[in-house]
Each structure stands twice: as structure tokens, then as C-alpha cells.
Image (tube, rainbow, N blue to C red; front, side, top):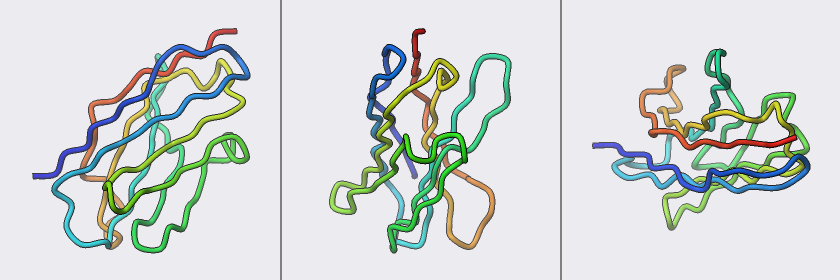
Length: 119
């Protein structure tokens, strides 16, 4: 059974930094993609960043490029999201997700962690 457990959310001032972690269990092999999504109040869930587990390749949503960094630790089965230069519009619940590289849909989701950026 796949489980994704996020941690590290909290309250930070504009311009500050925050790091999120997602510990994964139950994923077999290395042919999967780990990603972060977020959902702000009253809005739909949006993609933030993804990392291919085997290669380490990454991609980012345009508004976070240069500010957020996604990374993974293979030994710890953990993916990270380092968020710098945070803005009030980054306020959202952040979700960790996983999918097979052969699928488009993310099948596995964490419970989410709140990030609040005060102005």
C-alpha cells in the first residue's frame, strides 16, 4: 500500500522560506514521478513541481521557477520542496503526489500540509 506523508508546513512572512518533506512508502522500483501540488482557498488544485525519481529531472510551474526547488533523497524515499522568496499568493494546502512514469494521472496523494504566507 502506497503512503505519502507530508510535513513542514507553517506560517511565514512574505519573502521568507519554508521547506516541505514527503516521505513515501510502498512505491516499488524507480519508474515513478513525485510531485507537489497546491490548492488555495476557493481555487482548484494546481501543479507546482515534479521530479523523476530515477533521473532526478525536474519541472516547475512558471510562477515558482527560480523560487522553489524540488529534490529527492533515494535512500530515504523522501521528496522535498524548498520554497524561497515566498509570496502571499503561495498560501495554499500543499499536497505530495506520485504516479508511474507510464501514466499521466497521479494515483497517490498525501493528506496535505498548510502553508500560509503573511503580507
